[in-house]
Image (cartoon, rainbow, N blue to C red; front, top):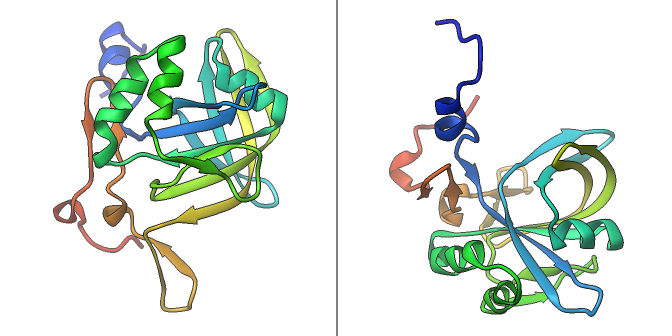
Length: 188
């Protein structure tokens, strides 16, 4: 089947496809923590593994990331759905109130807050950014990764168990999660 244009229906239904949902953590200039939900995240390689993050509009997390050069990306879980929903619907002063309901701690190696109960946390240092009409694409170096659900693999390195993490996935209209029954077998 050939598709020649991205229709309005396709944009509303299939773009973006389901993605892991993260809380991007930054500090405001006054030292208070800021959290923003993000899902447009991917990876790149440039002498090491890095993260790409696309953020649209005028958001505090963008201003803070550009000002400090740091943020954390905290994977969110099924157990946090109500908190995530409250954060996603909040704006202005309610956003700070919603963020304060999360269990935040200072990240070990970066000036950014992290979720203490996140199963996966990336500390990200800003490397480069590209401005587009309405959005900014950030390239960040991963300075640290922490996981509460990593076990030692056969060679002794940590292996992230995505099913045990129960990450919250977001699509255009729904939240969903992975379960043990969704695992089909090893990859490659």
